[in-house]
Length: 332
Ligand SMILES: Cc1cc2nc3c(=O)[nH]c(=O)nc-3n(C[C@H](O)[C@H](O)[C@H](O)COP(=O)(O)OP(=O)(O)OC[C@H]3O[C@@H](n4cnc5c(N)ncnc54)[C@H](O)[C@@H]3O)c2cc1C
Image (cartoon, rainbow, N blue to C red):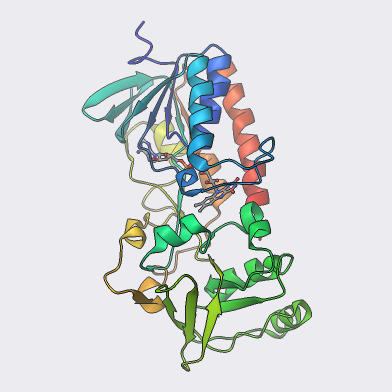
């Protein structure tokens, strides 16, 4: 049997999730093929300090490299490419990538999410320098005592801002809402935390210098050291899945699901040096709030009836671990 064209499990996505699954499955002596298109969010991490065991910190690239080494050491086969199509036929999955076809009884989708971002010029540089951050749990510590702003719709920005008060006494909310309305309960929470009451929408985020300058609708402006967008993530649904009742059931990320389209435009460099946040506003409201953990957990695994049960058990355990982690990570 050709390990690469008929693996026991095909893993789509080679970020930490897919690579961790590859390590586990390979150690369970499964033939694993992992296909990755190389856009892991981890690549954006200049240095992370919250991975257990890396006291001096680790860059995203190095971390991925180590995970790749570990997976291949146990026999996982890793290929670069984008899986364009996934079909369920005659009890197996057929995936197509870069003109090649692979058949597997089990597929694990670890295609990650995309952070929605304001369409700011120089955004990649700001992210790399730590001027724009996404996950306060991951790196709030590194924003200690800085002037922090959280930008996004108030209902998303407020909880993040409240959490960030752990790290700095200077935390402000930059609302994207056209009308800024704060309930009495939220007003009390903000006052208790010492966060200025947001009264007007932010109109502009200027990234010309080394710091970000926020300008409100009234013209008032404010300098920021660290910006946390709070616009939510979207899951990647570039993969076209076809047929097969099992495949369809597990593919929760369908056009009718709660996932908004991934937002590659947000990474496009804008032409002007200063971008209006109006153009950067999140797309039309989703039909219901994104429940990332549910979506990801339901869509991560797709198995055919003939799939080997030990692999299923492994994958279920991974799913549970992932669900718990996501619950923790999505709380603030
Ligand atoms: C700026 C920044 C800083 C961060 N800092 C930290 C930190 O300090 N600590 C921490 O714990 N976390 C941090 N994170 C979060 C961390 O990067 C993510 O939690 C992690 O990358 C998620 O892993 P994943 O495998 O689920 O998805 P990803 O890492 O996004 O990987 C998904 C992979 O799937 C691939 N893919 C997608 N579609 C296809 C397809 N059709 N075919 C083939 N491949 C496909 C993509 O190319 C990508 O490589 C940070 C994130 C960002 C953006």
